[in-house]
Image 1: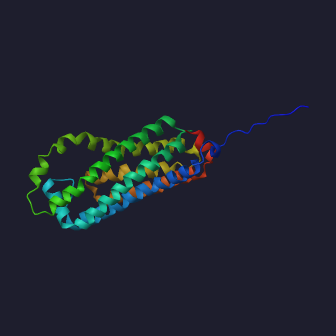
Image 2 (image 1 turned 120 degrees about the vertical axis):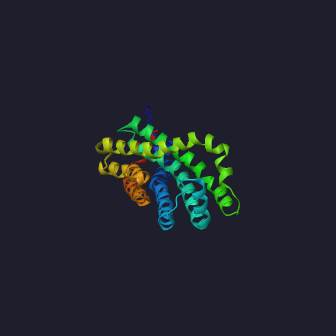
Image 3 (image 1 turned 180 degrees about the horizontal axis):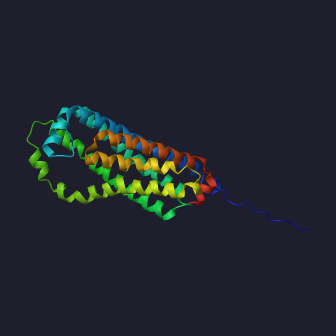
Length: 241
């Protein structure tokens, strides 16, 4: 009597039953994170346009702005914080989508963006203290300017700038260069690059609405990348690490 032994190749589900949930959650979180940032940028643009003030100039001006629009400051801060947390969940999805085409470029892009938005989370949390000082009827500008955070926080601010602008630029380039391999239009990468371009125009004096427009373009591009993640099978997703 002879018998035969058959084996079944492991699937993503047998190896890790959560892979499908993680793939879908990350894909949804990717554009949603930056939709939250867009909402924050839009509220800020409305306030800045109406008041003529900015929180990126002098400390005194930032405090006046916070005191005049406390509700909007809280809304912006909460939206930015939530967006940062969702970015940490969603950005690895972009890395997995791009890994077969541009693994190194995608790794650098996503790593820089994760570091940048981690720093941005900490930077935004300080807005609550700024708002408290702004509405506390005290002369707080000098105290803030002399705080050790102004000097020691600079490296983290620079990391945010590199991750926010440079990382997003690299991510867009990775999508453009790997578009055919991952099955998405190259224009998705160009749309993602809309954010650093729009934000730089804003910084150079074009106005906050260029940043808002750039963020909207970025979200459209990220939706395309997220759709590619949703189309990927669980087995393929798990194989990409």
